[in-house]
Image (cartoon, rainbow, N blue to C red; front, side, top):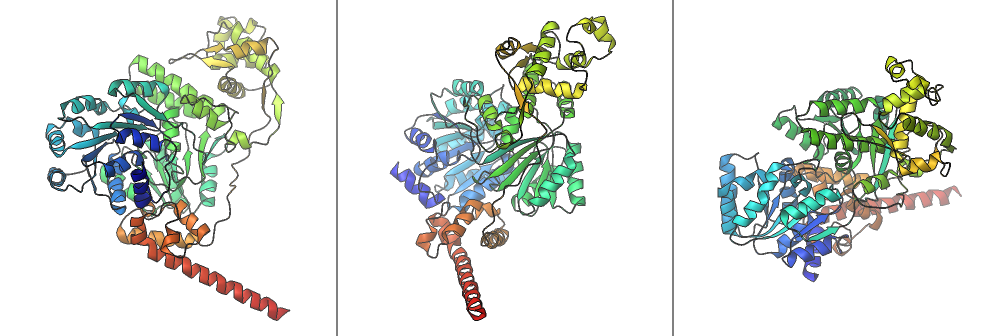
Length: 606
C-alpha cells in the first residue's frame, strides 16, 4: 500500500486514507470484488481512482450521474489524470471520437460510462479489446429493485461481465443502502467482501422546524448566509418555481431545476450553481444526482421527502468537504397529503405502494422524534447506535421536558379500546370528542376514552400520536390505510412501569452558531473564483474550502509548507501554488505593516 499512499499524496494532497478506503483499495488491488458502503463525502471515488492509477488497463466507472460526468472528468484532468466519458449528451460523432481515444490513448486511465451503454455491444467490444482492469459501479443501490432509485439498466452488468474475454475486478459503491439493499447487491454481483464504514457524518447538523411561516424562515436563513451556497428541495415543480420567483424578488441570486425543464436549461442552471454564479438552487429531487459541489453549506427541505433514503441522499449534498453544514427539514402536516397523492397517482404495483407507504411513515416519524436525529437516521440504515451526535436539534435543545405519561396512557388506551383497527385520524377524533356520525355509528362515543383530550384540537392530538409513533410506543401497519398498533413499550406505559417525557414548547429558530471567519479566507476565495472563471471550471476544482481554511491557519510561505496543506498535491502545487503563496505572503506583510503602525501610534499617544 506504500505506492497507493504515495499516489494519494502526489495527486490528491493527503497523507493518509480515510476510514475504509485503504481496506477497499487493498482488496481491489489484490483482484477481489468488493462492496463499499460509505457516507456521502466519505471519499468513495478515491477507492477506484487510486487503483486506476496502479492498473495497466482501463478503469470503467458505471454511473447514472450523467450531468456530473463532465465535472468528474474535468476534476481528474485538473489533477493530471487522463479521463473521458460516454453518455447520452454526446453526439454519435463525439462517441466515435471517444472510442477512438480509448483505442489509441494508452495514458487514458478512467472512462465514465452511463449504465445504458452496457447494452451497446460495439462499445463493450471496444472496451474488451482495449482491456479493462477494474469496473466501478457507482451509486450501486440503483441495482436494487427495492432501493429508492432503481435503474433497470444496472441489471445488464452481470451479462456484460460474463461476455468479456478477461473478467475485470469489480467494486460497487453506495452511500444510501439499507441492509436489505446491500444483501441484494452482493447476491446479484456475487460479492463476498463488504466494507461498511457506517453512515455517520460528524460535520452535519440535522434540524426539523415545525409550523410557522416557511417562506419567512427560508428567506431569513438565506440572507444570514449570503456568502454560502445552498439547495432548497421541494416535492413539486410548481413549488420549486414559486420559491425561485420569491428569492429573486428578494434580491437573492437563485436558480431553479426540475424535470419539466429542457436539458439545455437544466445544464445551464446547474453550471451557474457549481461555478458560484448563483447562491442557491430551488429544485425537485431531479437535481443533485449530478452535483459534485463540495462547499454546499446547507440543504433545506421545504417539504417532506417521500422516504429516508431520498432525504439522506439529498441532505448529504451539504458539507461534502467535511466543513460544518446544516440539513434542515421544514415540516408541515399537509406535506403528507402531497406525498400520498403522488404515490396514489403512480403506476407502482400494490406491493411496492405498500412498501413506499411504510417508508413515508418512517419519514413522518423522523419529523416527530425528539431523540437524536442522526441516531434515528443511522438506525434506519442498519447502523445500530445509541450515541447522540451532539449537533442536531434535539441534542442541542435546552427546553424543559414535561411528563406526558398520563396523556400517553389516554392515547394508548383509546387505540386498545378501538381494537387496534383504526388509523390516527379516527383515534384523534375519538379522543377529541368529535360528533362525527361514523363515530356514533361505531358506538365509539360510548368508549371510556371518548373526549379524554377534548381540551385539545384534533391537529394537536394527531401530532402527539405522531410523536408516540416516532418514539416507538405505537406502530403503523403498511398500506394505503395504515392502522395504529401498540408496541411492547406501550404495554409497559399502560402498566405504569414506564414514564414518557416530551419537550415543553416548540423549539426556537435554528441558531447560526457560526465561528468568526479568518480575514484571509475571503481573499483566497475571491482568488479561487477568479482562477476558476478564467479556466471555465468549478471553484472547488482549484482548492476546496477546507484547503483554503487550512492555508489561513498554517499561512504557508514556501512550496514545502504549501504541500503540508491537506488537499494540495504535487500537480496542484505546480499549477496554482505560486499564485496562492503570493496572496498569502501579501496578507502576512499587510498584517505586519498594520500591526507596526498600530504599535507606533500607541507609543506616540503615550
